[in-house]
Image (cartoon, rainbow, N blue to C red; front, side, top):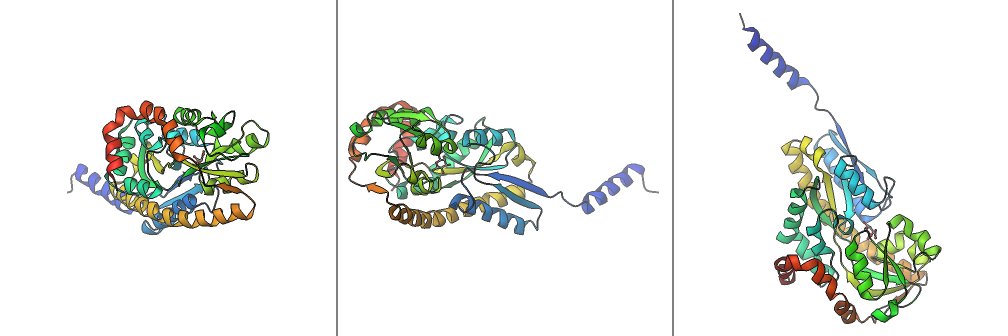
Length: 323
Ligand code: GTR
C-alpha cells in the first residue's frame, strides 16, 4: 500500500499541475494621453505580453495622468499601487540621486549622443543602479524625451532675456538651480498644473520637448519657442519591485526582452511625432527662435554641473567619450 506521505505528495503535484496559473493584469501609467509615443509603445509591449503568455499576463494602461502627477506616480510604483510606470528621469532624481548625471544641463551633446549612451553599457549601468537602490523599483528600459527648449511670451536668446521670468521646472532641485543659473526664476510644479499656471500668470512659461509643448496645449498660451536645448533628458520605464518579485524568472526575462523592443519602437514613433508636432506649432503661429547663444547658457550652467556632477566625474568623462 502507498505510504500516506507519498500519496500526499502525488496529490499535491497533481493539483499543482492542473491548477490554472492565475492571470495577472499589470497596471501601467503615464502622464501623457492616449496616442502619445510612450503610451503607444507601452501598450504595444502589453499586447506582445498578452500574446506570448496566451492572456496570462496583460497590461492595462492608465494614461493622461489619471493616477496623479509624476511624483505621486513614482511613489505609487514604489509602494506597489502601479506596476509599470513611464516617467521622465527628472523627477526620479530626488529618489535615486545617481540618475541626476543624466539630468544635468548640456550633459549630452545631442539627441544622437543621448541615444548612444542609453543604448550602451552606461545606460545599462544606470538601470542597474536604480534597480539596486533602495527605491523599490526595477528599471526596465529607456524612452526618448527629445530636447527641452524654453517657451514664454518673449524670445530668449541669452541669459539676460530670462531676467524676471518665472519658468516652471520639473520637481527636482537640480532643475530649479538650472533655471536660476540660466538667468530666470525656476518654479517647480507638476506638468498637469502648468497650463492654467501659464494662463493665470503664476508662471511666464516653461521648457519642454516639442511633443509635450504641443500635446499639453502649452503652445496656445506661450507662443515663443526658443531653441535653448539646455536639457536632453531620457525617459524611463520602471516596474514595482514587489510585483516584479512575484513574477517567474521566465516572465521577468520575457518582460525585459519586450522592454528593449519598446525602447526601440518608441524611438521611431517619437521621431515621427516631433515632425508632426513641429508642423502643427508652426501652422498655429508659434515663433521658433533658433539664433540662441547656447554657449552663453552652457557657461552660465557650469555651477550646476559642478554641484551635481562632481561626485560622478569618471562617469561624466565616460559619457563624453561616447561617440
Ligand atoms: C515631458 C515628459 C513627462 C514629464 C513632463 C514634465 O517631456 O515626457 O514625463 O516629465 O515632461 O515636464 O513634467
